[in-house]
Figure 1 (cartoon, one colour):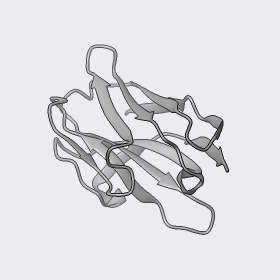
Figure 2 (figure 1 turned 90 degrees about the vertical axis):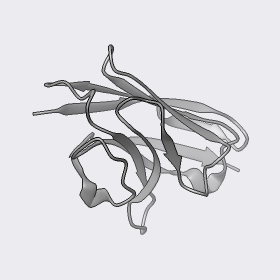
Figure 3 (figure 1 turned 120 degrees about the vertical axis):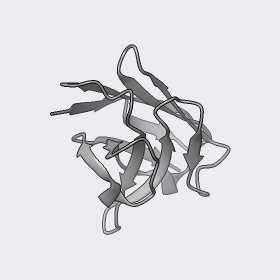
Figure 4 (figure 1 turned 180 degrees about the vertical axis):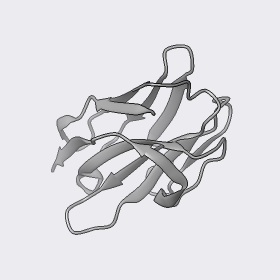
Length: 124
């Protein structure tokens, strides 16, 4: 059983930055890909970024490419999302999740464990 706990959300002005962290416990997750998703009110959960188990390969949604950076530390069992140049459209609840294997997938069905989410609000 894997437990994921996100932190680092908050309120920030447009153009600002936030760093989200996700701490995993319960089992080793170094062989699993990790992902960040977000869900805005009235919208479906969407893929934001993913990273393979080795940390060497990353994937991003077009909407955040060049602004967000995902990273992981398999020793500390953490995955982070550095978010720069934030826009009001980035406002959502952000979730980290573990993939069911070592591959990054953009579909939420490909992820077996989820955190409780952390709110990110970007004001204009």
